[in-house]
Image (cartoon, rainbow, N blue to C red; front, top):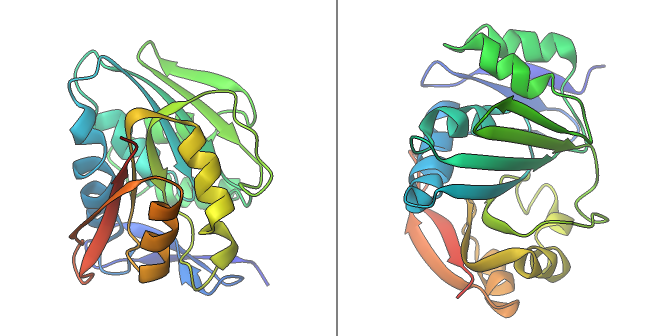
Length: 216
């Protein structure tokens, strides 16, 4: 039995259902719309005046967040994009997702970039994909923005702990932010406990709330 299964979501974009964790990578109500709202509008766009930006994504998944970041960054803004993924998609699944996107070339450059090695996509965008476990990871950089797109606290509670958030807090620049689709009480409590200032925001379609936190 294969772990992953492609599914079409309500906005026509594709996501992956993970049988191991019994969850989809993005919302079934619209994978693209969720990613645009949570990570681009409430994350990336808050740093549009910053000439260079370092981004960490926890949970590369289908690569949708990286792809949308590439096309929605500010003009002339340079981005270093580091992404962690313990269970990479197969090349067959990558090709299926690519077939649903407007710019297959850029998507494939992102997803076919070598693991554990910095790879320039163009002069303004460098990707560094890490095939590692967030629970054991050591960072060599500090970041301006973190996309926390792991499976839900119900599916993977070990990823939403004080230890994980403390590690991320320590590797976030002052004035930096972390955005995530989750907004449960324990998530907000753990984020506050390590020092983040927590904002609860309106969520994407069919979800009441999301969270953005700042390192003040």
